[in-house]
Length: 324
Image (cartoon, rainbow, N blue to C red; front, side, top):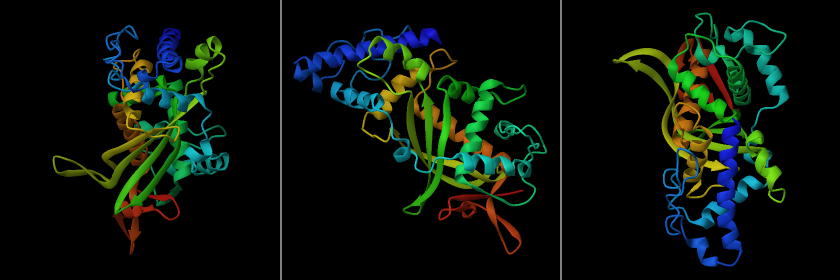
């Protein structure tokens, strides 16, 4: 971890030097890229140079704009207006036994719903959850996973959680909404970078980077049956159709994804495989989808019969109904 912090410090100094060149009077540099400046092959980390980080063709003005986003304290209320509260957490904990989790005076063991190895998990009768309650439970499951991982869990889940742990990521908000006839899922992921930026803030007191970064990821989604070789194995599964966008601290630009890719590659270099925005997006969605699947099938009851699909999401009340 200390090694990663040192690398981040060097990267920040590298960017700061370029910024100082711009501020110092060579205004033309603002519209130039690292490649045009002849530094595309400069080694930034032990494994990656500027070219390999994917920012060789990004203008310095664009990098500077995104850098200013993480220096200012993010406005959580604006970024995640539907973030869960303590009240949402308490009400979710009270419902945990209805999802097959053992009653506990402490926090229920939500990570079991992430990997779903127990046959006793899941609802036995229809249960409606607020999206805020779901966000809290997913966040709690991730944090529990970061502390301990049990054996027998699918490798894809372990890989996803390991990357999320390197980023110290938690889910602040999960919101499903309709737009132009399609369904979208907005996920606000909080990255706790306090330890990573501590050295930068200490060495450069005039530039104080915020302790947290909020990444808002939007995917086009649907609810459908999961089939294997044409045979339905799970009904009412939250399914990703298309990645739509990512913003940082509620700011979006055409190079947000490229710069985030560079940052995530550095932050996850000590893992099995460096991760990009798209990889992390797929991991986040997979974990949320698995969590929902292990609670139950998304759907509703029509004339006493279960009906699986997008109708199980109430876009007016921000609630999701799960069926056995």
